[in-house]
Amino acid sequence: MIEVREPGALAASLEIDLERFRHAGTLVRMPAAMSDLARTLGKVAAMLREAEARGQAVDLGNEVVRLIQQFRGALATMGGAPAQA
Image 1 (cartoon, rainbow, N blue to C red):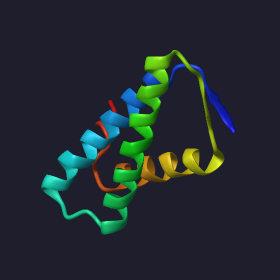
Image 2 (cartoon, rainbow, N blue to C red):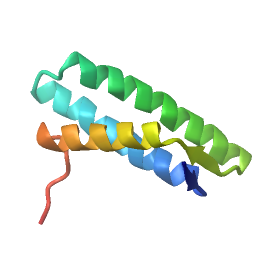
Image 3 (cartoon, one colour):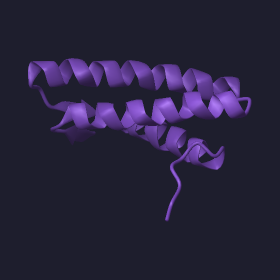
């Protein structure tokens, strides 16, 4: 498990990734599995926002961390990642 002391910051990062996903989806057809993963991570972001509102730290399981990494990797592969200078 990984302790997240600032769940709002992680939620904001996930929300940015989810917005990139939505934008990329307007340009290319996204696989259904990516859409399912995006919905799941949207729920994770909402839970993180709740924890932030309560002033609580959050323990993320390894599976959740793996899903975030998988989503970000797939998003970068599909062109939904920000440009690098």
